Image (cartoon, rainbow over all chains, first blue to last red; front, side, top):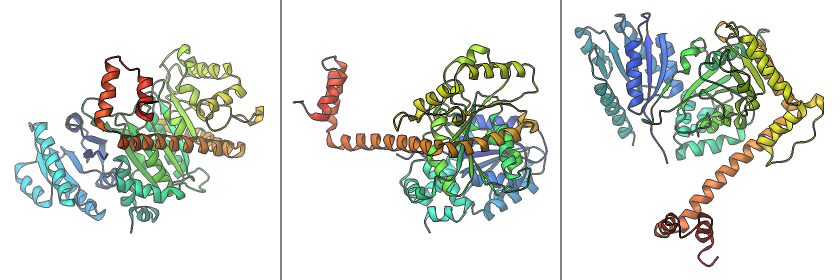
Length: 138
Length: 339
């Protein structure tokens, strides 16, 4: 009997201290039956990549409100790749200007969520992205 | 190269993947564990348990730092951490938040932290915890800190798995009657009053000391073994100096105060176990219990293959209708109708 649970790392990189959004999302993912590894505030991209490796997660959700997303995300993606974790799906929530969204998606971010996003949307996107990976492996 | 071989070579990604396989109870995970089994048995397994909010994660964080950076600068040890948090009984999901308190360990390649959800187990650990600990042991981690679910009074599985059990208390959680109840305090090899800078720490410490004094050391020892080891062999008669006196320590884990004393007692307990022969006895008890559990599940599934589902359902129906007692039903199912 093998039970496959979706494991998601939820982290807050950068220096802003507002983690309300991250906690709401973590809670919603939990209620959707996922296992959420919550790492808390002020994580560096290195800490995030290392935690993603040790925890062998399927997805990483980052909450960024400080405007530093164009600096932080490329670094996180690069480190995941360096660790041979390209399969890990990266999602971003927070305050992201519209004009940055296409560039983030181009970099390989799977989803960008601003204020007002329904958590159901995030849940179904994660499920879809992760199951696509599982299917391609078999 | 097999997954097990990569793990033995020190590949952290392989280790992380193996832990997932073990947690999900897959055939690959089991195969790798079989391969790794001869390499296990070296690590010191230390359980950290206690009520929610007593500071288990903070203490684990500080202990790991201490073992990585010993004050004398000699022999930094590799530290593996397994932190268990509860799964929601409704959604099956979980929030695993122990890493929040373990930020200090980031970036140290000699530390490997893995969070896991209890997935329905009630004893304070998850079903797969023991297998995951074995994987870390084989991978070469010298000391493995196992943090249980915030435990109340009866979550004592950790005492079966760990060589050394640290029970963390905090001031203001209960009066003396809590201290004399059975359960979690009895399994402590080391008692820690954390958050000792808070009012009431002296009272908590005193209550714990009183609790310990009430039990005669020699008797405690045999109770200890009687609880977990009786099936293997009766405890050998212990002389006074051969028995372990549970120390009561104070700490303020968030500040690092008292942590080196706790670490010192953990090491002293390991030495005691080795010198008294308890190390071997505990290993025997633990592996014996694991083997028995494995035997039970294997026998049951093997037997289930020999009986038709209809017959099984028919017997259950008769039991429900009170025409057959459960005991009689078992005899019929195992030995056939004539028995």
